[in-house]
Amino acid sequence: MPYRNRNELPESVRNVLPEKAQDIYKEAFNSAWEEYARPEDRREGKSREEAAHAVAWSAVKQKYEKGGDGNWHRKS
Image (cartoon, rainbow, N blue to C red; front, side):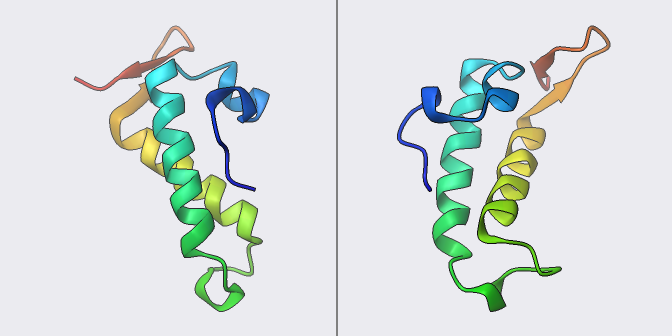
C-alpha cells in the first residue's frame, strides 16, 4: 500500500514529523514496499508493511532527531 501523498501517511507520522521528514518517510516506505515484496527478502519474519515502516523510520532518523522539546528537528 504505497502512499501517494503526505495526507495518506499514518497519523502517527503526520502528527509528529515536519513536512520534509514526512516526504522522506513516504519515499523510503514506497521504495521498501517494492524492495521487500518477497517474504524471503524480509528479516525476522516481518510483514511487508512492517519492513517498509522500519525502513522509513530509519531513513528519517538519518536526517532528523527528536529534540528535548519532544519535536523532530533536522540534524545539524
